[in-house]
Length: 250
Image (cartoon, rainbow, N blue to C red; front, side, top):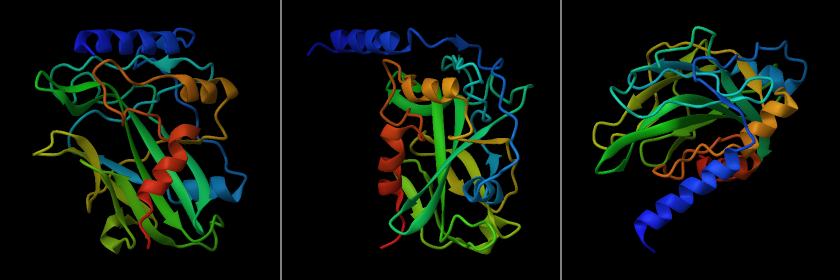
């Protein structure tokens, strides 16, 4: 197939998918306030919420607001962090939890209006980017659970470890993660770090309004030049696949 025809077809497909979902400027998305947790799952998501340190690239932004409007992102241009050093309205981290092979998995996801990820010899990044990390515990009970392992989006694959050293934990429970751009790959990714970072207001998949959850489930964060990992990690089609591919235990 002619490459130009393929690119045009892909672009038309993405436009059609998103036609009924309103978008707004990346710095105008109103984040959800962190809610008082009521279930064990919500309490554990708050308890183990990671710290995020930014070495390179954009800071995380809210991606969707209560009415279902989604961030339009940023066209890739300039430096890694140009135009995306944080929203005046506040930031956001999203989470979704489930049992997987006898372990309680809490997936956290951060959205970035643009991300470093070479798409061709002509481009080193693109509009929209997601990073995720998974905290693996032995129970959803926040009063009787222990971190068993961790996984995160790496520069080439999902990085995973079946043990987490204390130097990578804040207060013995919050992963300390660093968002960086790989020197050799040019890909924005996550890694464990000893550096302290910031936390963001958390909203779980279940706490989202129906409009927001539907928008995140249906909106295509791809563009004609994007690669397959520009996907909202918590949506049904991606969540279970990521748990399978990120499982750190034998």
